[in-house]
Length: 130
Image 1 (cartoon, rainbow, N blue to C red):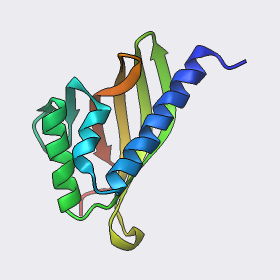
Image 2: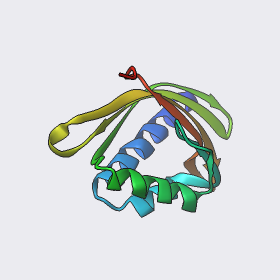
Image 3: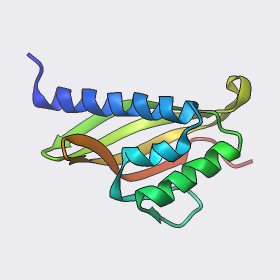
């Protein structure tokens, strides 16, 4: 029997697969739909970006920079009722599977109307500055 924590992890991993597919398709405006309306994106070297619309703008700029693929690997999920904390690793690739960046992330997820949404999203690179 699968317990509730496993079901939440599976739902988050499924949401990540859908986000990856959506980004890969080039429909980055739709990536904003994976975030709650009050979401905050905390990218490195940038001020916080608040709200799904602003977050969609951010991902549109990422695509324009030449990033073609976002890969997310969930390492752990700590479920706390309608909130879950995900720790994971990411990889960003360009044309021809060229590695652009890889690192780690923490996402706080919120259950919104029966759907898990990214609510707080922060990451940093594992690459050392040259």
